[in-house]
Length: 414
Ligand code: SF4
Image: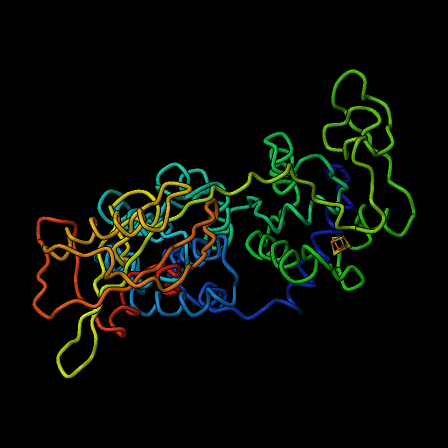
């Protein structure tokens, strides 16, 4: 499975780089990385884009990236920003701790590293909070030219297909081999371009559901395609374990840790998408919360809504929301209202009648690991309601201010 033939490694490198040179998408962080003479600013731009791109589509990221770089063009500018500003700009991008950690790391570079970014993948990972092996490799190869590989979801898919790796691609043993392979493959003179080429191939050609194999620059080297075309598997010369020293045929016959398990044979209706294989995903946790939109008429009739700030750690840390309350499973509607009314009393400083809460509907939002339902109520209140400063921060906002605040997509749906 591994790339052990130098001629083949050379052929894959040149095919990928030539394809990247002619087919790559024009993206703002690539333009900056290509033209910016200051290497640390280059690294900062790559870093911001890589963090935003984790779990998020390129098309969504572009607008956020441009606004971010306009507001904080340097690490120093980001370090001087407040977390509230970071959350406001990040609102809607999801996985909010990413923005927070990016800013914490920027502050560390400014205050502890004299404003100078670490320049190798090892140091980046070691010294910067929130920078994992992938992000460190991307920054070091693209900005500082270090010949180090990267492995993200796109690379996993491409390499598993290219080399017929059918063992669980999320297992540490397989991931280790994929990192080894990425480090062997990476082009020594153009490591950043090579890594981006591999990821670009996964994002645009070797896509999860309907890969464009006939347009693929490395199709001649692809084991999954070879199997799909019924040319048979290449021989697996696995050197793992005493029973696996001779040439073995793919399909796990000889206990090779990278071959597809014998219990999960090739499904010809899936073609190359037989790879990569993953262990079944854990079911998301189901959660319910009652939430209430308190509304009061504002001056000249513009209504205002009450939003409160979430705690500074945990899910959606520091973001603003309508007053909400987690609900125990199976709680009856009447009880739900009573509990919510009791909770709201604290904010409004006066009794709230459960019967005054108007049921509006339910909003479902899927977080990465939580299937969340918000049971939404509304409540009109008088002008003179005052907020208790001893509770968590809260404020009245117009609809426009609400959308400009650090609120999650789930709350916008509410
Ligand atoms: Fe992916 Fe198809 Fe290319 Fe193989 S030939 S790497 S499956 S796009």
